[in-house]
Length: 263
Image 1 (tube, helix red, strand yellow):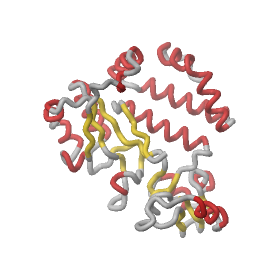
Image 2: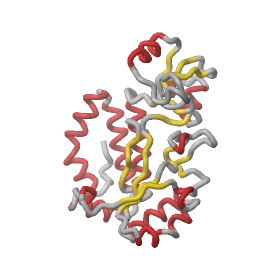
Image 3: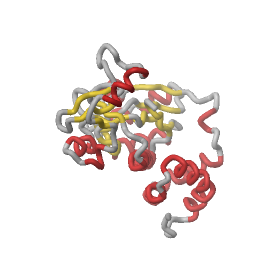
Image 4: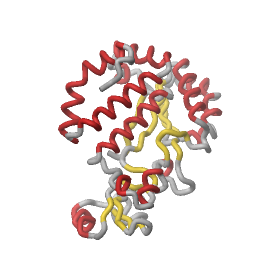
């Protein structure tokens, strides 16, 4: 259970939603220990949350429909194409204010392999900004400056898969069965062939098939997009808890909206 040291704000919020959280999580996983891991991750994220963001949380609670207003107006961009880096993007906020933006949607900017990263949608580390774009500190600084200008930051959060060079995938390749269970890995083509009979391909011309052979594991891996993007196995509660923990980390850097990609 969540530590009693956490202040009443978090405890009261969790209490209001706990029955629903318990029912949904247990109906999916029937894993009390994993639920407790999630609750502990939530508590730790709240404890680490900067005070100005806790203040924003209370404002959002008082106005839960803030993002639905007809006055919301946004712009979508790649950081490098617009400004070169997060630090340089922060210097262009006056231009964004001139456009009367209320939110800025940045395309994927988390650590990725180069050059094969599908425009950033192959993520190597969900907790770290890609070094070519800046640092976590740069991201936090950008979100703070955007909030001061009345602009909320939205990021793509790629829930469906990781890069094949993600730490989990590398451990899976090394033969660790725990991390092989973070993905869909098969010794033969029986299940992949059944799957292929009814499931269309995302990129039939550039990446035909939904599975890729991994020489290191001697297994087939589900790769719905490109061979370097391994689909995550959300039947495993550890995957969900880890990904939600990363989402909370981004929220603590000041990201206000996450666009959930490819689910």
